[in-house]
Image 1: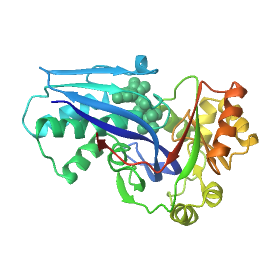
Image 2: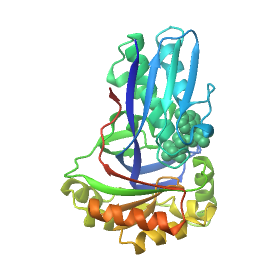
Image 3: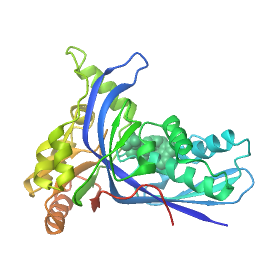
Image 4: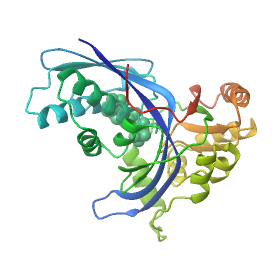
Length: 297
Ligand code: ATP
């Protein structure tokens, strides 16, 4: 028996970051939108736990038990008192360390794939619980669509979306570690009072209407100054996408992937062409969102 699960990448259309909490995490108001770039996680029976990965960025993905997909399999096996016997193969299309939650996607995919392969029949609540243990972005990878994440991002409320939004993503040459970006956020804000994070009602209205211009006016990412401070060249990528006619240009999550919201498919092609020609990024991807969460194929 072989089970394959498809899982989407995400972009944060709003990422409001509150002050550091005593546990070191930050309270967030995090509006996730799943987009149509996917990893596929395939589970096949094996003796012991084995991880393989293929794709252009596969060399950067750990194949030991630190892989988030392996951690998901171990967590599910542990809860159900069974050995984690599975070969997980990750067909990786989501940029690695790009701020698009690729590792989180693989964790959600591995969880659903193992649950199906092993017949553990975990409830939706249990799956979401395990996801939240594995990382702040993992529950969203399971549910997909659009959602507001609060707490450290893991408490999810699904959001209504009135249409499909067109996006262009510029993949940077290099990665950024999410903890390093939060540390830079703390450093840059050490002399100011960081307010509690609040979601923008204008942004929620724009999503509900499916209105790209209104969404473009409302997108924001509080981690952007920190990502730009650590990766100054992203300023050139953002400028290239803006001057090519994108409605909004922002760093995706903790970066260094940059995200460009565009009017329609034609504008997406133009912005993608200009970004490729600019020489300010390693690769360019065109897609739409919202996309469904973890899906059994
Ligand atoms: P986020 O948007 O959730 O902050 P990200 O997209 O920036 O995450 P990931 O691609 O999830 O970053 O990977 C971050 C790091 O996690 C990688 O550099 C890698 O060392 C490690 N990692 C562990 N498991 C995986 C996985 N399955 N896929 C990719 N990276 C993984």
